[in-house]
Length: 352
Image (cartoon, rainbow, N blue to C red; front, side, top):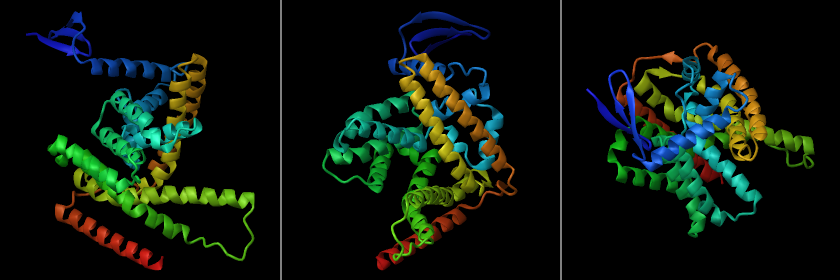
C-alpha cells in the first residue's frame, strides 16, 4: 500500500518502510515559503551556539513557534509555573514584535498614520512564518485593525479592535467559538482591558506623592519609573490570572496561582530574548558575526529564563490539581468578576 503526499513544493510516494522522491514543483507555494523561511531563520538563530541544544530549542520556540525540539522538562516547568503560554507564538509574541516594529518606525520618523502600511505585511509574514496558529492569527488581525485607525482618521482603541477581530474570525469560521484557544485568548483580552487600569491605579495610588515636596531628583524619577514598571507587570499578571484561572480549572483541572509571580519574572526575560533574536535575524542577515553576537546574548538570557522558572516551580502550592468545576461555577465566577469590575469603574468615574 502506498500513498502520494505533497510536502511544500515536492511530491513524495510513501511506502510502509520508506519514501520515494517523485518530483518537485507541486503543492502550496505559501507552505513551501514558510518551510524554507523557517529553516533559514532557525539555522541563523543557531549560528555558533549549536552546542546549547536546550537553549537553542527554547529560542526557536519562543521566536518562531518551532516546538518540535523543545525538551519535555522545559514544557513541564512551564506548565508548573503557569508560563507555558510563552512557548507558543500567540498574542503576546505578536504584540512584542509589533512593539519592536513601532520603535524602529519611530526611529526612522515614520508617522503613526502610516504605521499600518509597514506593520500589516510584516505582521502577516511573521504570523505565516510561525505556522499561522489560531492565537497568532487572532492577534495579527487585532493589531492590524488597531493600527488601521489613524490611517482612516479614527482613534484606535483595543475594545473596537477586539470586537472587529472576533466578528471577522467567527464570520470566516463560526466553529472557532468552540475552540479552547479562541475562548482563552478573547476572555484574557477582555480581562486585561477591564482590570489592568483598575489594578494599576489602585496599587500605584498607595504611593501618594506629597504636593509640598520639591520636584524629584533624577534618581527619584528613575525609581518612580521602575516602580511603575513593576506595578504594571504585577497588574497585568493579576488581570490575566483572574481572567484565565476558571478556564484553566475547567479545561485542565488545575490552578496555578504561582503564575502571577511567574509572569512577572518571565515576561521581561522573554522580551529580551525576542529582542536579541530579532536583532540576530535582521542585523545578522548582513554579517554572520553579528548574528553570532546576538545569539550568544540570547543564550545568556535563556539560561536566566530557565533558572528563573526552576526556582519558581519550587514554591509550595504553586500548582494545585483539582477536580474540574461545573460550568455553572465558572459562569458564577465571571458574573461576580464582571459585577465587581463594573462597580469599581463606576466609583473611579465618580471620583474623577
